[in-house]
Image 1 (cartoon, one colour):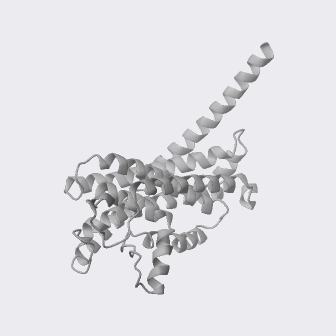
Image 2: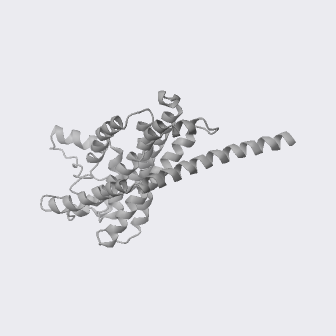
Image 3: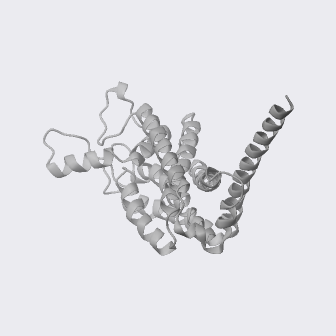
Length: 286
């Protein structure tokens, strides 16, 4: 009875140490990011600038039904904030390895998944907070109506923030160069965002469409970010439902499908991040 009690206490202490490590790393990511004001301004200011410039400049050229380009581009701006903030916060993994901090965490008596969990939660919280600031601003200027869809959009933004930060951890963990990380992420991020219906609509499938349009449709349709942005567009913008019988000038997935694909994207990126962190790399031995 005594041995069983001691075993339970030991297991509880181990779990407590792991949770404490996760909390410490999460708090460190948060404090470290907001102490660097240039990163805060860059991560939030650039998407807002793009929204204002493209929203006004593309107004006359955009064809999206009753929507103007500024309204159409708003979910894409939210996704841009989530994407760049969530992933580029994971650069701290490379910096921590260089400074020796990561090696100190690795030799601590806690499992490796705590490092991934702390980095993902910290980066996702930062990305979600920044996107929320922009959403509040959009509500204040009247670009977003105060409806129940806001609650669903906030939840979907949190899900996307965790998934995208996990994707950043997957790419950052085996790297030892911030320049290499920037090069790889630019190669991944821009197509992931541009081919999601964020900046231009996903072409609707048509019988008379050419091969290029069909290929573009399916490439964008297979992009998981298309469903994140599609869900945000469904909940934040006035989009006709499928039951209304009004055809959209572009392809847009249903809200249920958006949630299911976004959840699958979250699971896939979390598993990928966990497997990446579980594998030792050469930089861990420095």
